[in-house]
Image (cartoon, helix red, strand yellow):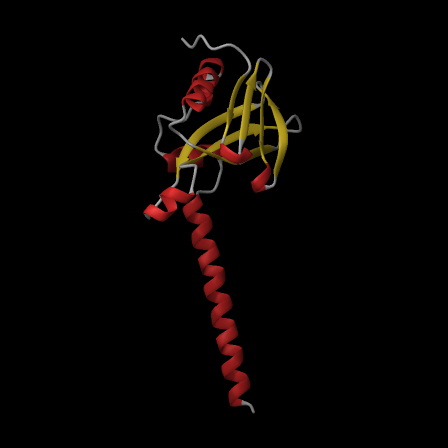
Length: 157
């Protein structure tokens, strides 16, 4: 059992992400990602998991002060679902304490024991890899259209 008292807070360097777990809800904000402060009641809270970020180079490791996204999902009172990705450093003691307390309060919400793709599927949250693949596909189609248009213009002049 976790003996931590409310509120439990976690803040990433520079205010990139902020979490506060209190007795009636979870408040979060990520101003640099355009996510305004929002409070989710604990009764509406559904799932959480950690989606680690692959940091490839030493330069990235030195420049990035987070190593994962905390993915949260909830159901709104109007039965609509919501989710958010917050940049976190998954090894931070404050984050671990907050997640332990959240797991104690809502044990069925903890998906940390599952592989990330399965957890994201249960949460109905698209994976970052899928988002990147879609973006690359759109960029490739756009590049092909531009090249095709230029070639067509050169041939018709």
